[in-house]
Length: 89
Image 1 (cartoon, rainbow, N blue to C red):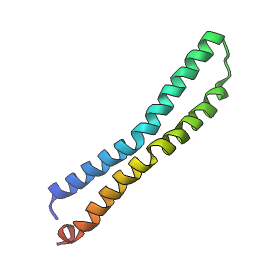
Image 2 (tube, rainbow, N blue to C red; image 1 turned 90 degrees about the vertical axis):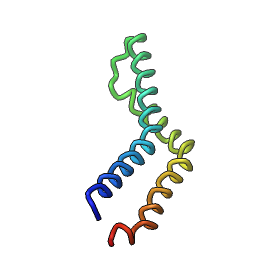
Image 3 (cartoon, rainbow, N blue to C red; image 1 turned 90 degrees about the horizontal axis):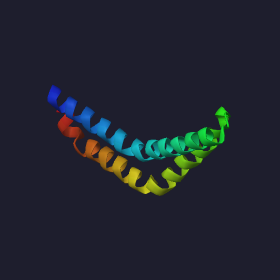
Image 4 (cartoon, one colour; image 1 turned 180 degrees about the vertical axis):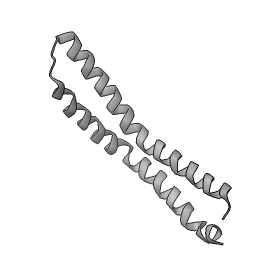
């Protein structure tokens, strides 16, 4: 296996990680921003207030995007297993 193949596998793995994590991170970011704006406008300085809405938003993102994320991961892993003889030889 050449170095180019290793780099390509690494690039694909990073792309899969970014694609799978993006919906959860994006929704958590948006909810955190909304809670921060709410805290600023109401002068509530409770730091633990932002945790529960973010956790709920991440779980909602998993429920909504879960099948898509699973499909992306299964396609990547199956391509690794299908090409395994090529990587070994």
